[in-house]
Length: 79
Figure 1 (cartoon, one colour):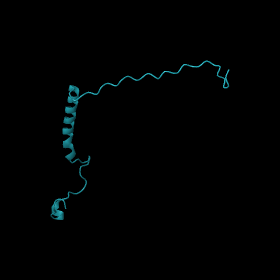
Figure 2 (cartoon, rainbow, N blue to C red; figure 1 turned 180 degrees about the horizontal axis):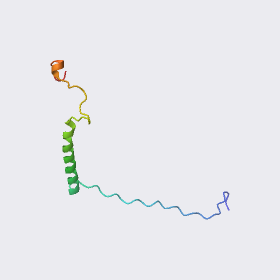
Figure 3 (cartoon, rainbow, N blue to C red; figure 1 turned 90 degrees about the horizontal axis):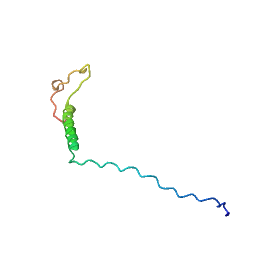
Figure 4 (cartoon, one colour; figure 1 turned 30 degrees about the vertical axis):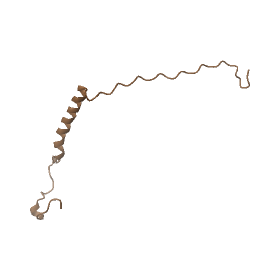
């Protein structure tokens, strides 16, 4: 028996935990499903591009009086 009570049996060292499975490789641009997804995204973006310039109003329509240049006089664009 030692100074610190070392008379007990030694435990074997713990083995490292198992590694997780390797992730699936990323699809390349040559993959047909990637090409199809990219084309679909382009079509959606092209379809939505027209909506950005559309003037939308609420359910009641416009509630203000129409603003015309005749009432205020002529103005320059950007001024």
